[in-house]
Image (tube, rainbow, N blue to C red; front, side, top):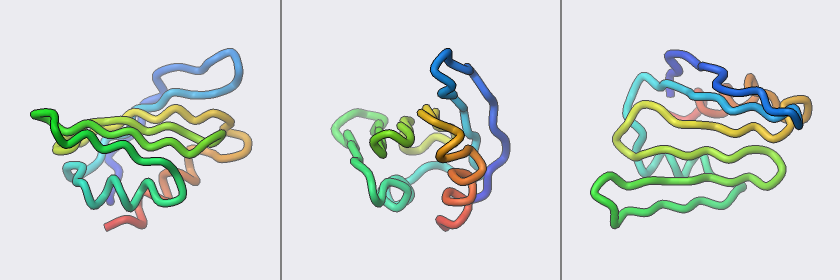
Length: 94
């Protein structure tokens, strides 16, 4: 999926980062589960606007709302798994 932009929201004292990612298309359930491969996916479809959280332990958390174009990422250790690596993974998902 094409990425429009990223915004660094916070640099934490433990070197982790919180980033907002804006996508060109809306986030779908298929996209969420594709991105969540290798991690734990929570998809709460019973809400009027389904929310999701993807946790890859020690690497990142991603959360957002299905049907929206933005999601928030908490990169735990950007020296081990960088934002660029995550963006490349996102762009590979159609």
